[in-house]
Length: 152
Image (cartoon, rainbow, N blue to C red; front, side, top):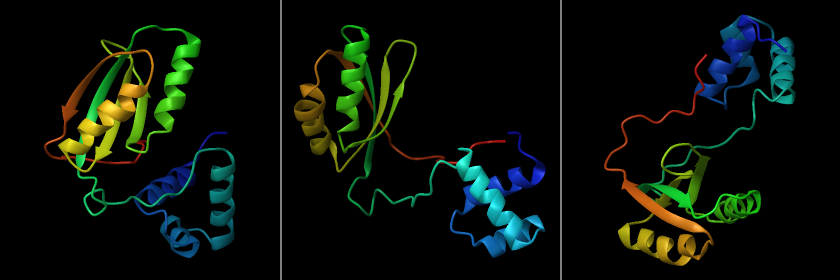
């Protein structure tokens, strides 16, 4: 399915505020409520809209230290890779995980309270995952830009 200009406008507005009412969204795209409602449902059904979430403040939840942890595996087999992914998904401190190319195999975004919490995470959780060859940690000093929007 291809998107028309109204679909694109709807997606842009929803990226800014997913709590916008269908009535307000209809006013913004200059259509009546029913067609906008149907378009949003179609965009959801077709997978353009994956889900709606609340973006929380990690500082208020005592998770103010952000660490990017690059991971290299010792071996590269399908079974080892799948097991690593399964293990990483179970770690609550890992908010994002990407399979990457280059010097490392995976990039993890880890949210923890402080350096002591990160040390515990590395030793007791990440360290218990088999076949990790090496890790490299980069600590975030300040957040410059954070966006969940997909550019059109």
